[in-house]
Length: 337
Image (tube, rainbow, N blue to C red):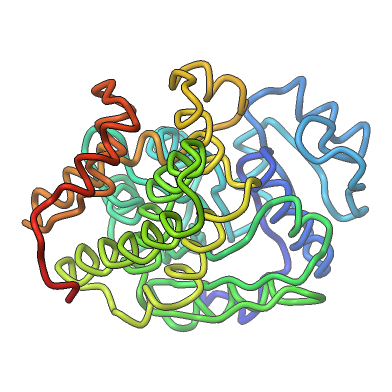
């Protein structure tokens, strides 16, 4: 069966702030949306109250957005399946829905991260579990959940295994104040979305230490160089990293306190420990987990990523943030390019 040229129904996995915000955008565009959460009590409450009372209170659900905790209902609802859960649960969810999928299903995701332990990108995890033949893709870009949920102007990139799927995904999201561009560079879009989270922690640490705007600008610029070094070595396109899902998302998350990763960095710079800072944030902080995975990728590729490396040392080796900055600044002189 040939996939339809437009998406009319969609299943969205993950009723956190980001998953709910994307479900709202899709519903506002007229799609029949089913939103899933692993917690039956939470998702039943959202359906009853017609809003996400935990993460996006006060933003009502359209009539065409409904909720369930049933994976069977999700897979049966639509051929197009959108995953918006933390990266550490990505493989497990694929395992659970795999027996329910058929040849007409397509999987795409809005999760930004890598698999803990293996360092695999999410498209590699998907291929591991579901094979090469299933159409897949992702959406990413400089978008905070609350602003998307409120319908404020936003833009992002849709990348997919085929141009046709990228166009279908983009068309589903585009509408109102939402602009979507297409890409065939799944790898580049994934890398930009994952690495910027680690760099946002670095920017937060710097600001938490009171080091000012000059230091923040240097972290963003040299952090971008780290993304480009790794992405180029892995075969991604430079223009992807210079686009919305690369530099756009990097600037956003490094400069605004809506970013959980930046807030974690701020807390670390102010002297708080990692566990208490994450507990206070109350949601997944992808950059904390990704810092180790990105180190694995950098080692395999033979590229230097010192900012990401020192974020990992602060989080997992207990290195004092001030000492981390001191050691970064004391590195040997080198050409900028």
